[in-house]
Amino acid sequence: MKIKLIRTGGFIPVTKAAETEVNLTDKELSRLLEIIQPDPADYRIKDGNYYELNVGSRSEAVDLAKVPDEYRALFDKLKSDLRIVK
Amino acid sequence: MLNKLMESGNKKIADLAINSNFRSFRFRNDRIFFHKASVQERAIFGLIAKQAGKDTMQMEVYDCRQKTNLAGATLLWDTKNNQKITSVAGKNVIKGGKASWDFYWQLFGRNSIDNKGLLIKQYVHYDRGMDNAFWDGRRMVYGDGDGSVFTSFTSDIDIIGHELTHGVTENEANLDYENQAGALNESFSDIFGIMIKQRFNNQDVKKSNWLIGERVMIGPKYALRSMKAPGTGYINHPELGDDPQPATMEKYQNLPITQSGDWGGVHINSGIPNFAFYVAAYNIGGYAWDKAGRIWYAVLTDTSLAHSASFTDVKNLTIVHAEKIFGIGSNEAKAVKQGWAEAKV
Image 1 (cartoon, rainbow over the protein chains, first blue to last red):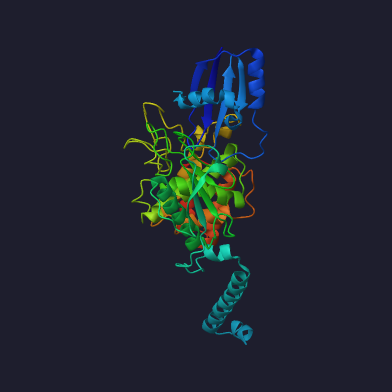
Image 2 (cartoon, rainbow over the protein chains, first blue to last red; image 1 turned 180 degrees about the vertical axis):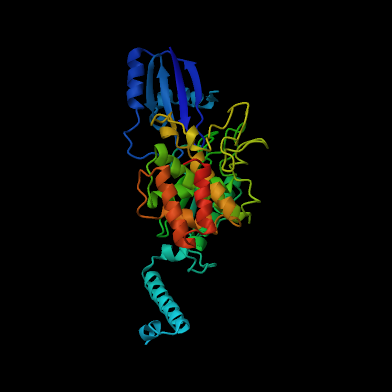
């Protein structure tokens, strides 16, 4: 399946995205999305960036600091591949 | 005695007595007002001498080593030890942090972000290729840029002043970070950021180009924002296209209050109050921080400024403070009104 990492926000609001093909079962994907779900925040970081993961029609906010070690390389690659969405 | 003279049949004597009585009344009331005035009010009226040399700034600079774990960052420099450093980003934030602290202290008697001497914490080399800077509620964090569109976000003093001012705003009006209040939050950061840069470079309103982040954005034709002409920071950029900021209210953008909607366009609609400030400061003339800056600082620290303030609320307060500081009908008050009129607020 295809997953797409999207970054929004920042000092000037720029959207960046990167996608890749992964071999994950629906169960593995659901578990991953659950783990990397951001904590509910009552504070909005000023000029902060935000990430979301798109899989098919699903779009979930994600906290990259919570990515488990087994998926670290995947997300590092996605982050380095982020390109400005024109 | 004075009362008797005021009732004198001699018009000249009566006029002199009335005039003298009026002046006594004003002196008495001025004394009472200034006796009760807060340090900030006294600073706004220019009654506090610049306290040059009294350096109580406390700052620490950390190196994130291109990681995102702030707790794991290493101390690069602090005011106590004044270490020699080689990091350009580190040197930039020390310079920008000092310029920002000096600005608030020497002009307004404000002791750091919280006016209580808060330790200023700055983190450089955040993440790999991060093209951003932010204030996380406690500290300022800067990325090195992606190297193609953006360079280090420490390259411009106005960015450092912008982030530090988010902290000041949080300790004062604490404007909501969405819709018009959020755009005002961003605008106050741009306004004080540009003044910090202008003061550091000794630029008056005519000499300044009123660009935010002109070095951060790679290419001589580009800047992150323009306060003089919002929407022209970058035009036809190969990656970013056109700067989306409006300068006037009829082009206000209603965006969703979501992360991807920039919390209702806080970085977009800030162009409108930015433009109002630019016009006001330019029409007043001289150094922006001398008069326009005093007015906007008085508004930012006015306890009646609501968290959810609208552009109109800030417009009204800037006029109130311009008239309070410089007088009703003064050129300064007229310039402030003109600024908001040109922004069509």
